[in-house]
Image (cartoon, rainbow, N blue to C red; front, side):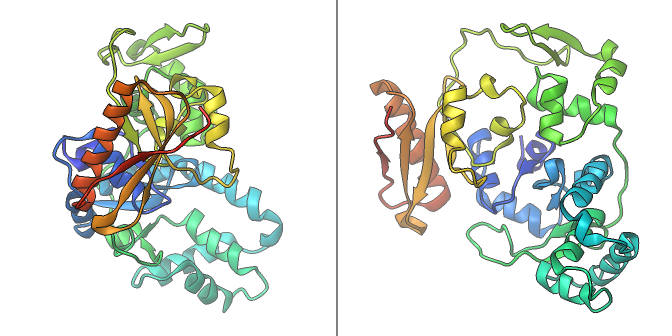
Length: 342
């Protein structure tokens, strides 16, 4: 599978930080290189845009257009919830139209956009003005932001101006089927957690003849596509290094399918929404991984949440070395294990 095919299969990858999607694709795909993804961004075949849960997602150009209308009700709700008082009686549609006009021909930072809008609406807080543009106008972040090992400010322009006009649409029924194709078996609540949307139960009901119903060990009803792979529970799963912010860990209401409650609390203990990549052992989070250093001197530090068998530690180390060599051409790839209090 190519990187572009993987982005569409996963219905995008959470990408508020620039580089985790590179590691997320590296961990999933054979023969993936960072240049492949950077090339998609430069060629405008992929883009970073506010979508599910009101967060930046990396998606194909086609999905940037197809997904945005489906999540717009969520973004409308979030705008009013976070900035309603500040907006007062501001004509948000007029602000959005002005933001779109400004950004159609040039890419600006959020601060620059807010300053331009404040020239016309001086009594509205800059942050609220910027958020109107971000929430009501489909805006993409342009390179060099998120190009591999490149730095760059967040600069925004319109999705139509950068990617061209939309060529097709996606229905909510289609979105449910695509979500299950990536993350099923899953419940209605799981998909609502992934998307930030509500009242999806009626969509699942409408699709009842195209889905199968399953039951978890705890008695929870989940849905899947009839022909989706469902491996035997005893099938061993190889060690994997999951990227920070990966939807594999974030896209379920019931995350015990990939991480225990105790480990989840530990992972999110910081409370600031920032956390490292995770280590999967037999399909479950068993620790975290972080990079240290830079360029060819980059190394990896692994913090196990549980005591790992010697053979498992060797697998984690081998996977880490593989990433360091592939991503950084590491001269002496080193994976160290810290005492995580397991």
